[in-house]
Length: 244
Image 1: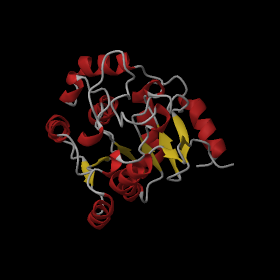
Image 2 (image 1 turned 30 degrees about the horizontal axis):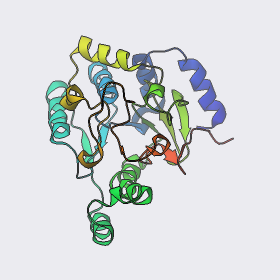
Image 3 (image 1 turned 180 degrees about the horizontal axis):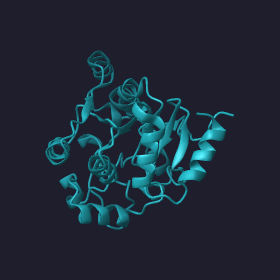
């Protein structure tokens, strides 16, 4: 899909709700699209829509080997409610062994470079394997989430993975996400009730105060503009421009 086609699709889906967006994306891409869930509240909204709409969109998630127990419980809850088996992708064991042998098990605390290395081994490379053979992928990103995400579009080009990227909740507020979860009795990670608005690896995520930014609990020892694992960025920036 080139830049002109993406622009046309952006116009077609402008002001559409996530349900309409996901149904249309399923029609356009067929078995060429998947949903990469981070198991966050936003992702659970998308999972619920896929489930009750009966969309044939496979759902995957990345098991970095350092997830919270609550995240595994959520995977079980998803399967029980929707009858959906979320496929897990793991990091390459040799790459993890080599990385930790050279830099230590908690290398991510030593420098931004080491943290990005850890994210690359545990998240970016597994995602690339998961996306192989697909034409598009769906994410739960919202503009309101952080300074690194405030310009995302509902439909955009993912330069890093060379795929179309769909963000059905790009326009939604946090309040809308939780209203949907409440109204539709959507299962969610119980850590959200303990002050975790954003949940990743247990070693890199903490609870935040009400006055703090929603992403303040992720890699809290780094500055806000650096707080991306690399799944949605190239050279530290979100890349969304389609090729001409």
